[in-house]
Amino acid sequence: MSHATAAAPPSRFGREEARVIFASSLGTVFEWYDFYLYATLAPFFASLFFPAGNATAALLSAFVTYAAGFLVRPFGALVFGRIGDIVGRKYTFLVTIVCMGASTFAVGLLPTFASVGWIAPVLLVLLRLVQGLALGGEYGGAATYVAEHAAENRRGYATSWIQTTATLGFFLSLAVIYVCRTGLTPQQFTAWGWRIPFLVSLLLLIFSIYIRLRLQESPVFQKIKSEGQTSKAPLTESFANWSNAKIVLLALIGATAGQGVVWYTGQFYALFFLIITLKVPFQTAYLLIALSLLIGTPFFVLFGRLSDKIGRKKIIMAGCLLAALTYFPLFKGLTHYANPSLEGASARTPVSVTATDCHFHLFVGPWSKFTDCDRAKDFLARQGISFQTSEPPAGSVDKVTVKIGATELHGWNEADAKTALAAAGFPAAADKSQINYFMTELILVIMVIYVTMVYGPIAAYLVELFPARIRYTSMSLPYHIGNGWFGGMLPLLATAIVAAAGNIYYGLWYPIVVAVMTFVVGTVLIKETKDHKVRVDL
Image (cartoon, rainbow, N blue to C red):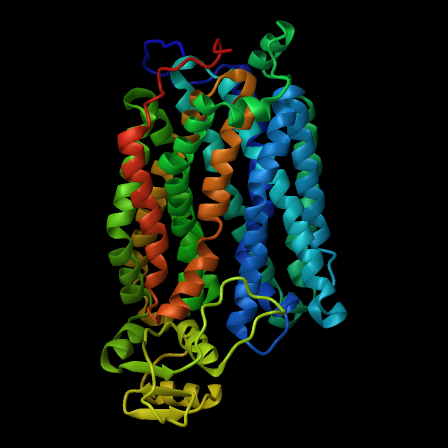
């Protein structure tokens, strides 16, 4: 690849460049708004689309459905990346947004489990798969399209505006859900109000299509097409050619995998931890997360612009390392400041589960069998309680014994467990008057800053790695495996690990290990790309 000497990025975009960034970013905000609606409502959907009887099983099922959309994203990257490299960036833009918008709108029309049984979650999964496929093609197109319009010395700055859209989409989804949940009674929201955020997305879809129809094709793609340089087989060139496939693999392991887990920990897992584990009221948790995103969003642009000066790699690696080193103290800090009563009760009162026949549950469905041991551990994990697990002595007649302080419960009964926990001083919910809002918010902002460090420069970095003829295909796959598989699996894996290990913080081992892997591989093996030309790189 050819190189150019970087100059200081101009502070303002030209009119055409600004229009391209706005149109691409607006559509991507809508795409993320769609996807985050389900992510935010996943705990709520557990009771709507899955059978009652085991709350954790239903929650895991909801997360499995959520994860399904992420697991299919790399396939969307292959399908739409190929179209984008053969037919063009603009055409692919339109297809992805229509697929995403139509499937999101359809979620608002779905029957629930109470109405049609298992048909409801099957239909939900199918729509999640369509959304995931569309999103698999969306991001690569937006990043490629903007980067191929941007000036060489401000590509990080230009593409960083796209990076803000994930957070803005999340923020918009939180705002809409918050308005619906506070403007309706709980009964109204459960009966029909949850459909509103999905149905109103139709208006966003129409506006986004209108904006994108006004765009012209990327000048780089126009140039290579006029010269007959477009790829006839972008999948083969991208992945069957080892020289390029090696770069794809390094981009995944040394950049996007760590970026994905840092992103989902700082946004999604932090939200789930506040609501599910720490029992912070959802209104309070939504406002805290929304404020942290509002404060942190400008840092996407700051780090994108900084990457034009000092490079992409240094910033991404620093974000991964900081996250890996500080996640445990940060999440313990959340417990300390958001629910001090839970922290105090856990310190005073040891809890243990002595049982046989315990299982690790990940992909939960009709095939799953939950034992009393599983139910006991799942219940305690949902209460935000860490516990020790041991095997019963030989000859024991009890399959499960739960010990809460000095109280022993022989056999499993959830009502008895609730009574024992209350007697031991474990709070059923966080006391809003005891929440240290400043410190809780500060911790959330710190985690969002990590997100902006790893995510702000990543689009420019991936675009610069690959030649124009196979750029859309090559960059989309590592991005969506890193985010869709490594990142998207985080809520599901972390929830299962916590229930199995008996420690509310052990789910953090997953993002920490992946972030460390990315830091080591990225520091040693990947190269800096900020001076690589994009507009003339054919």
